[in-house]
Length: 587
Image 1 (cartoon, one colour):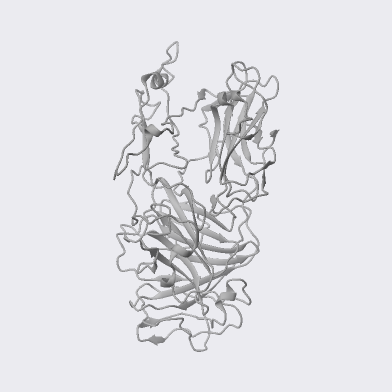
Image 2: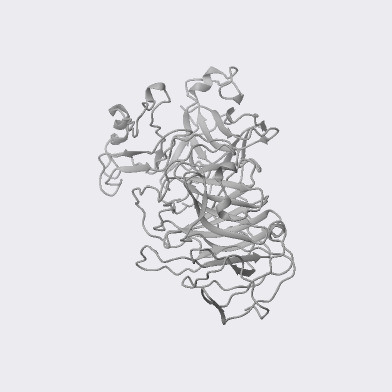
């Protein structure tokens, strides 16, 4: 269906902070000190979310990740929503998209307490508590939607067990814990309900251009499709522009995803059909259906493209993508890729793309050029290869179109095509790859260097359904890539946490603090303030709660929370289990 109308952009609702915290102690045999921290928040939600990026992690929508980026601090702030929590959850990153050899953060319970900590898994899937805690918990919050966990993590940590967060694709992995654990080390990922999601965590910070005053919208949406009960479906739908639709410029577009289907809609594209066909048969069905009209194969001119995790796309103020008018087809084809690994049935969908367009034509016409290699057996990786490079080249007939000067020549106009956006896609297959576009260009018009884009983290690993992790592979810090980004101001001034940036910071080899979550309910006990001496170190300003039933506390919180102080990293305690303090007054 195609809809024309005004703009309506709902904002994500996030509760406003009214913070109360509780903390306790969890020791290990390696004499490291563990800070147990929780923050319970109450109150109404602000109008706008401090997390501009969000993505569902599992097909059922049980886990949802939101995040924000501070390039000045080189830190990512994560917010993980767990809608249905049992005994715990694992979340993290890995080179190959599996829970083996992964950098993890874990929420778990041992029946006496509930904990949050930085961990890693080896090639056999065994989980270990990390001696260097780089995931810092900032708050935990129970809402009607579920449990929110807010934590932060630096891009790089100098920890050989951690993943280096950089430009390109990141494989996010997750797993669910069904039963309480004796210890974190008793987790083996091979027996868990697991899954993965691919996303670009480090988003570019690009100012949004102002839209023209006469901007109108058009919605190209699937017509209440019943999503097929199979893992992969490409759905095609044909619609058309109004009769006599004049030439316009598309200046922006954004996704419209049916609520509840966020984890099933993988990507969407709007194509314009070839102008030489006066009519295109209307169709709504699988793109590989034998009933699909052959003329749909000539609807390949891209007007808009969106993939899971992407935000709205804005064209530069001086350019727009032309559609409509003489020499342009009225017929459009919407293609939606449904990724349904759990083979969920009975879901209906009306997702699509909203186009923002103007009749005030801009100075330049933008265009979309698609480059790549076809999926054919010729492109197969030979057997027994440890490394293989597959290269594609543009012919001069293609690139010459970018270098043609205006006719007649105009010294005020650029003599080349300026590339302002590049997107890489390998869909369900493809090792690391990249591209470059360059040409002769005058100063002041185009970039003087080739436009380059490389993704060092895409791996040949097709999406698989949860509960079916594939074999383990190497992990670690990740692979450093070309970083071409200027330091900017933090994007999340409203987020909690220390805004201080350490100048000249090097690898923090001595950091041993473990930030853990201790969730309790029931009767609260006042702790002891200051002066407590422990054989393993000096514990100051710590309040603890008696843990009568921590597993039940994961499901429901009763009573107020106690505030707490986060201990300095130099403090260490040699005591296993929660530290129960004598009665006193909490700070």
